[in-house]
Image 1: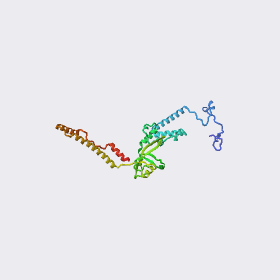
Image 2: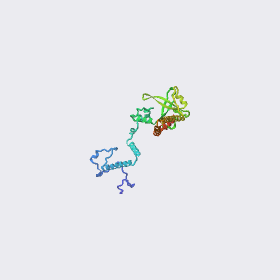
Image 3: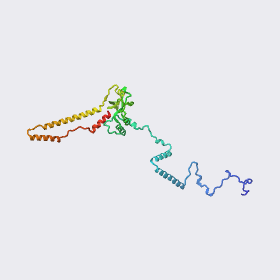
Image 4: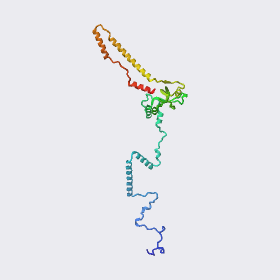
Length: 312
């Protein structure tokens, strides 16, 4: 570089450039057009895209959509649901309040049973008109309605609460093998009581006969003020002896009728031919007539006997 053109020849370098110097003249290709002076550029404004830029942007977004669809199709239903919920949270912030459940007016299964439960369903209630009543009817049919559970906490006020046993209580023997009182678990010296249980339901007074199996202490509470009827169990040997005695009596009556019939047919006649014919007819009638029936136990009798032994 020529020293004459250097502004600081003693150091061998040129002066630094200054921002206050004269601006370089724009070339002919960088000259502003006449309409450019009317467009004011603001910092927050987006620059206009060219057609080539718009095509590239469309292809990029189109590819994203197809990749997202392929990802969704490769998921199972649960993962797809989580992905869509996450996208909803990210796309619509603050709108998750629409997904909140209003639990103030909702009813659980327990609330429905409490509202529509009946201690005894009548035969008129064969076809409930709502699903709540149908569920309460199904729950009633699932209960074991031979013995009941008794609440004797207010027995001095002559107020007794009763309900049917559930499946777990039946399996544990509560109310049958142990005392049927709600807070008692005594298993010795149990007695069965038949109670005319009166209650109010749906604004009507109803009553039904129920059985309760209680210990002596709870039996005194049950009979506080009024005496209930005790269901006494017959001995199994006594019942068997009565059935055998009844069967023998029926057999003796049938045998006596047959002997009288044979004696009448064996009386002597005036002629030997008549005698022979009468004896022949008597002998044939014995074989042709019905055989003496012996009363045997039927399946229904055996089932009744088994249930009597089980529930009494």
